[in-house]
Image (tube, rainbow, N blue to C red):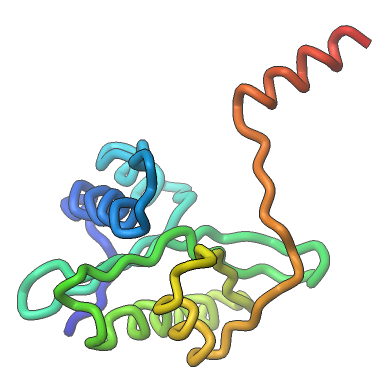
Length: 160
């Protein structure tokens, strides 16, 4: 197994793995990410996302995408694991654990102090892995303000 930093030529494969992740989770709509966006946000002079890929038996087997974050509550910088995907053929072969270990190594070497991720409530396999690796459940509830609601909020503010 090889875990390596993604290269620009991997962008389409990474985007495809993110789409496969959504299908595997039963998402009703696919992510909008494209290979061009992966290239733009991973390989720019000031990247927003860090990315690694796993290869197993010469084939792409998984990916992990990390976003540098800062927690004001902790007073620490860390990585948010945006996506972690392991292909069906590579599951139960240690790929996910190796990708997370790589993220932990990168975090440690960069002086980051924590990893954070979200997991679907019914993804029991992922939850078992994360628990075994030492992740703990937080008390936060994830909430989103999507573009239509954001626009409505801004329109309300402009009326007051």
